[in-house]
Length: 265
Ligand code: SAM
Image: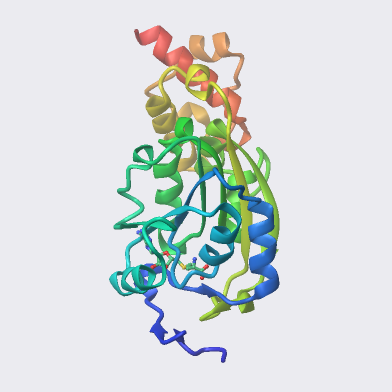
């Protein structure tokens, strides 16, 4: 029933972003796009009541899960043996994904309230990861895959495109969940780009530059990056100081960070 906040006897907790998948066709489509095989090292973030866990387990025979809700953890423990599902109780935002075997395949219908910090946390483990398939708010997926000139283009686009090749696979309507969220969701596929760390010598510096450049979207680089770049730097970089940050591609930000890093070293 629409509006009903409980599912399979569990009262959905808003603070944990709990919207449980109920649409069988959508579940089958997500699981077939993951295409897990026996021997794959799969970790599911937020298994909840197991909508994805059950079919994933059938495909790959063993799975890791990270779940924060104690009630759901208790239900998972009742349902699965440790040989089938290795249950990690805790906050995915603090979880050390490098403690799991590599190359890791990370999947999940993510809690929307923490999706951006979670994506940034996961980006730290890119070298440990084979690929990631997530359900997120469509608006977030639009931002992830946006290009310069798109309205959705911003810090999330640049910082994730630096580390991952990403593809928007398909949309999922709100009525595929209980309770039904008001927004449309989407499935995104992410694969780490090899050697991203070599491309940019100081990713933290690049992060600060991107944050500044998009912090005041209407201002030009001359204003937003004032402390970092002088006229000679713009000339060396062949970048127009009168542009807004939203006009620059991810590769331009890498060049700016490497230029500043090299100059100040
Ligand atoms: N996978 C289930 C499904 O598709 O029906 C549940 C998805 S629900 C959108 C998000 C899940 O993530 C819930 O099980 C919730 O308890 C869990 N969760 C929320 N915050 C979390 C966190 N910080 N760390 C780990 N799990 C979290």
